[in-house]
Image 1 (tube, rainbow, N blue to C red):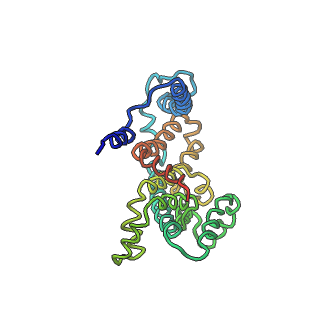
Image 2: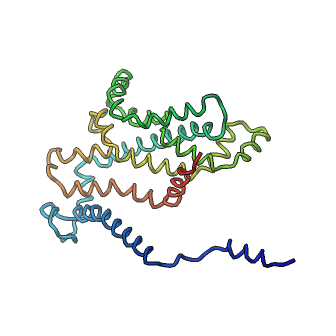
Image 3: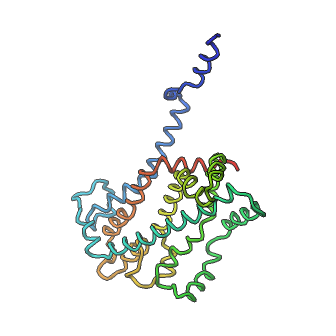
Length: 292
C-alpha cells in the first residue's frame, strides 16, 4: 500500500509556523500600533496628571516632578472613595451574577429545545434591543417609586434578573456550537433538561459566560446615569457618581490632582479583569458570530 496519499495529508494538516512578514502585513501591524498608541495617550496622560502637584496638573510635562504619590492616599482620606468602591462592588457583583445566569437560562431553550413560536419569541427578544433606554426611563422610574426603591441600590441590579437581549443572543450562538449528541445522551441516561443545562451546557459555554461577565462588569462599574436617577444619599453613591461629584464637595473644589488619581483607581479593576480573561473574551466574541 502506497504511503504517498498519507504523507500528502500529513503535510496539509501539519501545523504551520509563524506567518511570513510581508509588506502588507507589516503595514497592518504599523496601523494597529498607531491606533493602540492613540488610545493609550489619554490614559497615560491621566496617570501622569494624577502624580503631579495641583498647580502642574495641566502642564505639558509628561514626567511629573516631583512625583506626588500622596495624591492616591489623599483620595481615600479626603473623600468617601472606599465606601463608593464597596457600593459599586455590591451592585456590580449582584448585577453580573443575575444577568449571566438569567441570560444563560433563557438562551438554552432557544438553542437546544423545540417549542411553538420559538422563532417569533426570539425575534421579539432581539427587537427589545431596538428600544432606547431613554424611552423606558420615566415609566421604570415611576414603577420603582411605587415599589419604594428610590434611594436604594435595588434599581441598579434587580432588572438584571430578567436577562439581557444581547447576552441571550450571544449565549444562544455559543450553545449552537455544542453538538446535540451530548444533550441527547444525557437525556437518555435520565437527566432532566435543567441537569443538562447546569452540568453539561453551562461548563461548555464558559468563554461566552466570561464575555458576558466582562461586558456587564464594565457597564455596571462605569454606570453613571442610573445611580444619578435613583440615589440621593451620598453614602449610597456608586463609584462613577461619587467620583463625578466630589469636585463639588466642600474643600475639594477644582482638586484635579485627586480627581485624576481617583479616575486611575477606578479604571484599574477593568484593566486587570480584561487581561486575565482576554483569551476567553476573544473566543466568546468569535463564537457569537456563528450563524444559527
